[in-house]
Length: 297
Image (cartoon, rainbow, N blue to C red; front, top):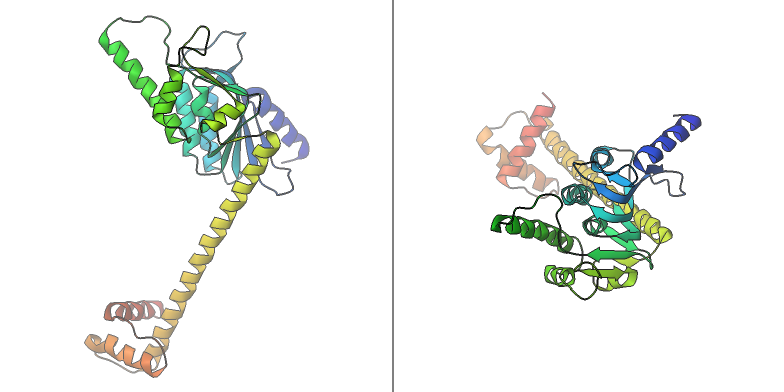
């Protein structure tokens, strides 16, 4: 891809989805930057004057990030007042399920359903002036005043508190305590946490800015690369060992004329002892001989 074409594609991504690829760093890590701002739009479109994050844009993008060999890690910038619960949780679950290193950074705020989005990354940051608001679930439109409606709202709220607890260091009981606090907010029930308070409560991992978030993501990518290199080395070692074992069995087979199949494992072990090699179990000896025969048919 040419430079002009790359710049044009980058501008289009920023304009349409608020995302950009960060791949010109000294470490040569390919990072995808994703922004979640304004209101989380659900099944109904928000008004034209409201900035919104559309989940139909994010879901396929997150799937592409997981599947692509061209992406090493994901950085998520958040400044949202919340929005549609189902859409927000679906995005949060997608981010949490990504196998690659992920880091989130709360800038202005990550309120309401923005909470699960902030903690869905493997490591989370919040700037000192950032805020998070935890409050009970609310509903718009027609509400039927029956017991089932209340039960459904409680179950929805439980899904949110459970996700927060499972992806952070705060207990479900403490989240519910903050969520039902009647003394903090003027027109609502709940709690507003500033940057350091969110960390002290265990909701966010650390206070920091862009430098800290990128630094952490680079470190996580490097750690992932080391794990892959180690796993590859272990696989190569096993393959080398298997190759040596087959080679030994082949050497034995070429040194004999014929042997009774029932005694081949026993005779092979006699040969191994004579050559200073470790004896094998009957099953392992037969397996090595079988593979050696197949290889040299």
